[in-house]
Length: 111
Image (cartoon, rainbow, N blue to C red; front, side, top):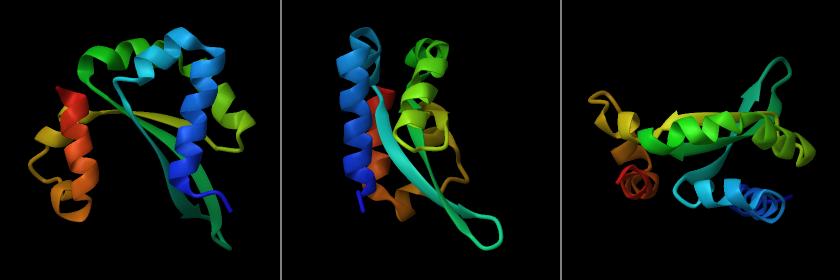
């Protein structure tokens, strides 16, 4: 089974090879494969989470059809876009305690 980190790297490589301009946009983003379980019996679903700063988010969302097509071809369910700046400013967020590495990476993306 392919791990989430390897799958995220492969997603970035495919986007950079086939859509170089979009690959440049993803250089300023944090791409992560997120796994969830849904339904009865629980079915494992994986999707791509793209964390971007507010400035880049609109440009990346404009190419959502291309990103969803690549994700679908890789066997992923969906692509989700998240504003890293807003997530870091959320006072109720427990991200720093739960996932400190992700929290630091999001600071890099937000700047």
